[in-house]
Length: 275
Image 1 (cartoon, rainbow, N blue to C red):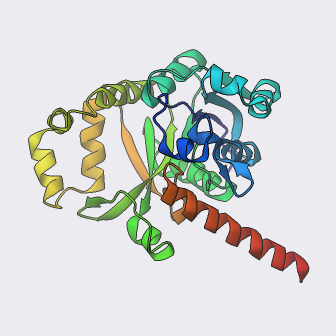
Image 2 (image 1 turned 45 degrees about the vertical axis):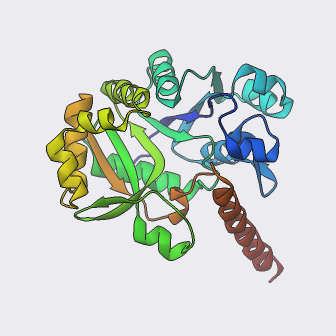
């Protein structure tokens, strides 16, 4: 089977002075926080550039004033032939939609700039699975089984999505397969505006769906079907069996966990190299 090639979109903007992790480490943005010798965003870009499935990379953020204060990242974004920088918009959904409107290139892989544990093998597998399993979809979402995450990292705190057919964590990995997927970004933008009004967010889902979910009777497929109706495009999902895919670095606890994981991986590589 031939390799399917994707455009990658990295969301690397954030609301000003809104990232406690950046404030803790004294950096200008969360994606610039160092994790075992390399910033989050550099790790994400390294992974994408190493992938056999990624052709070009669009990076939405950091803001111009952040880049001007970080010349190494600015140089990388300005000089790499496969990377194009875009100014971040007011929120991740707006940034993703702006990039999608300007590039109009499909399919595209969407991820976040703080996904420091993303690795090439997991990304490549996700791209392959999303293509094979969800041929008729406009959008594909990656979910990591909650048990997989907790078995690997028992002390971690992750958002747990409870469905009738299993519990899952998000992965910050999405595939926008067609131009129709822009409608889900517009829907996401609407939901973002309601983030401080959870009752309105719940109302958008519909009371029967919400009750079914709260009672543990909603399946993942039913949830995707409902979101497909609301967003105006077909959304499906695939399983990602790498627990690291559920860990983005947006808190001090996440940073501690990611640092420990990367340190252990490097130690194993060093030990193997000495044998």
